[in-house]
Image (cartoon, rainbow, N blue to C red; front, side, top):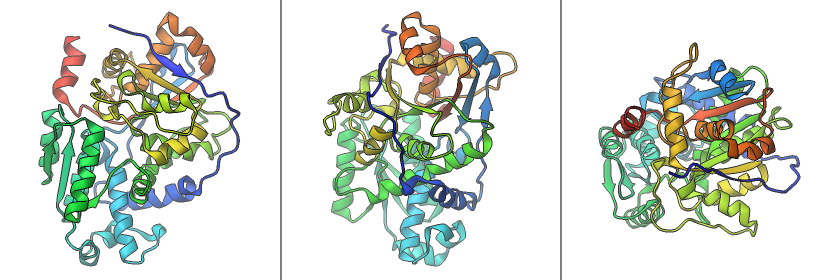
Length: 393
């Protein structure tokens, strides 16, 4: 099995970055809303000192999103905030004054007019949309690409949504969801943007800023490296935009990670011609949440200005990371991380442990003084595959 990783380092000076859509004020608005939701609990930022020593690093921090709203992934942060912004706009409520009580009130629910929330998903985003719809007393229709794990489908149905598995890969499933939403008058809450469809994806991205707000308070000292999952890249771009204009900006390098089989961000950045370079056809990777052939236009615009490196890893390294996080060294906390959630740790392991990766490690400046920040974006959202990986391989 191929073990090599690929990386691209943009040859551009890193200048000052400013985007008020993703600054501290925007993060505070999102976090204030999420804290008002019953059941909100800040997810932990775990330190893994034993693993850091083993890898020859100064420190490793992992934000564990497996307990977010009981949904085993971070995605509901985006869909819930987007729905709140839609309702708030109808109620003429400023973003800084949005609360769960106002959104879930009879007036708030009536503002949606019984609209159906629709989306396409590899699993976690659709579950978040289904949860959001249930919270607001609305219906949801969720489309999933061919080959989606049964557990992910069942998790969406358990929240009262209709889940439909298509015969197509992710990108075509997104287009199908858009067509169905247009034909039926549904609200499409998609976490990727394209020309003409950017407002809702923007609000979803701003919802992810709650992650950044929590991390900024939880982490003592500044990171030297921030590793983020790509996929359509909405989460990665939101956090990259936030951190690139924060007090961490001058020191922290932002590194994106995606599967070798779905390296659309790396291809687009490497081409450097202002066009998207999608990965066509079937996308074969167990990192289902990152199996996206085309990045969000809104996200890619930001990443081209903020990312310091793009990496593509084979499934093997994500699997190793799942086992490492689930079976920690003495004193380190155990983290149950799914295939996509563990991808950033997979890259870190490959860089630290594989001799052929030494030039890439040096190019990133990873050494005993490095302070690495990672986000485990999901827990065992496909428990059958999780058990197969951590027990059988």
